[in-house]
Amino acid sequence: MPTVAENLTTNELILLSQAGNDQAFKQLVQVNLPLIYGICLRYLGNTEDAEDAAQDSFLKIWRNLWKVDLKRSFRIWAAEITKNTCLDILKRRRTVPFSAFENDEGENYLADTLESTLESPAQSAERSLLRRFLYSAVIRLSPAYQKVLSLYYQEGYNFREIAKKLGEPLHTVKSRHRRAILNLRLNLEKIK
Image 1 (cartoon, rainbow, N blue to C red):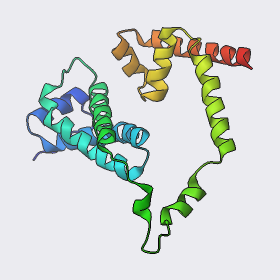
Image 2 (tube, one colour):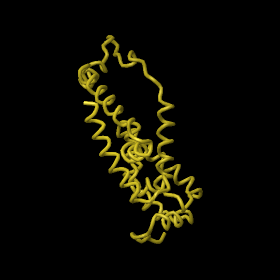
Image 3 (cartoon, helix red, strand yellow):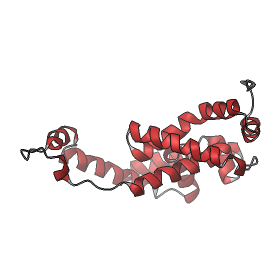
Image 4 (cartoon, rainbow, N blue to C red):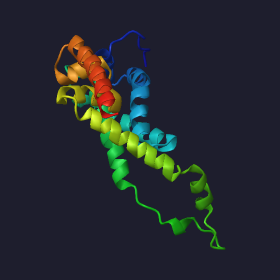
C-alpha cells in the first residue's frame, strides 16, 4: 500500500480512504482521535469505556465513510456518530445491585471504595449550588449566545466548526462567543 503524504486535507484523506487506502484512513483516525476520545470520555466518564467507545465509533465511521458529504465538516459528522455511539452504550448499561459486590461472609468490598471516592454532602450541595448559579446566569443569555457556548464548551467544537454548523461567518461566531462570555460575567455579578 503506498504511503500517504502528511499534508493532505481531510477531504483528500476521505477520498483516498473511500478508494480503499488504509494508510489514508489511519491518518484520518490519528488526526481525529483526540476529538473522538474526548467526546467518549466526556459521555462515559472513564478511560476504559471511552477507549472501547472510540474504537466502536471509528469502526462505524469506517463503515459509513462512503456516506460522507465532502461539503460538510467531517469532524462534525464524526462527532455526531461518536455521540450516538456513546448514547447507545449508556442505554445498554444495566444497573448492578449493590449486593453483587458482597463476598461469602456478607462483607461488601465496594462500600469501602465508595466511601473514599464519593464527595461529602457539603461538597455535593456546593456543586449543586454552583450549577444552579451558573445555569441561572446562562439562561439569561440570548439563545444565539447559549448555542455558541454549548457547542464550544459542552460539545467540544472549535470556532471554525461552529461557524460551519451554524452557517455563519467565523468572525461572527468568535465575536458572539466573546460577547456571550462578557454577558455571562455580567449576569453572574447580578446574581451574586
